[in-house]
Structures are given as structure tokens and as C-alpha cells.
Image (cartoon, rainbow, N blue to C red; front, top):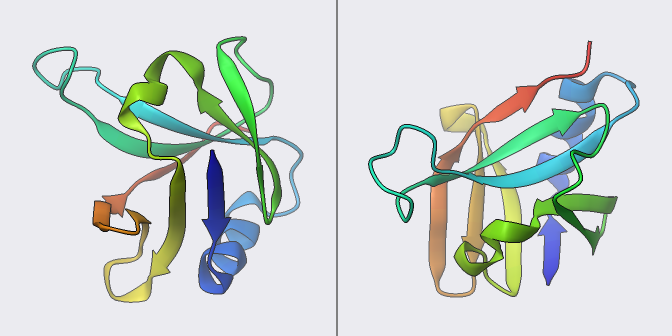
Length: 108
């Protein structure tokens, strides 16, 4: 799996994490989405791995991805920052996966 962060997304991530130590984790959140196959891609910033992740090398360093949700991920993805919507965007070579990807900072 390969994940590439665009330049503006890197700048926004740096601003949002504000020099704190932690891990960026890409999850497929299916909580309260109807059934197990429904969900949305979301970014979390966590202090410690939860134990169910795979480490993925990216152009910003290692990133975590939920191992049990890999079926919902593509082999090559890009994370962009969309200023007009104040949101991250997850896309692949075929188009947009999640146009408004939320970022949750769980590191205090």
C-alpha cells in the first residue's frame, strides 16, 4: 500500500498536530453507519497504536492503517487538503474516495 500526502495536506497536518508526538492513522469508520460495509475514511491523530494496525510508509513517514479494514482501502491513495471545504480529501487514480475526510486529534 502506498499513501502520498500532497504539499498543502502536509502543511495542514503539521499545523493541526502542532508539534505533538503521535501517530497518524487512517481508519474506515463504520460506527453508526448502518451495516458493517458502510463507512467513511477518517484521519485520527493518536498517542499510541491500538494494536490492530499495519504500518504504511508515506512521504511524511510511517502512518497507521486499520489492518482489519484494508479491504476498503486502495493500493495507491493520495491525501490532499481542500481549502474551500477546510477538509482533507482521500483519492485514488480513479477519483475521489472521500471528498470531506475529517481529522480527529486525540493527543492531548
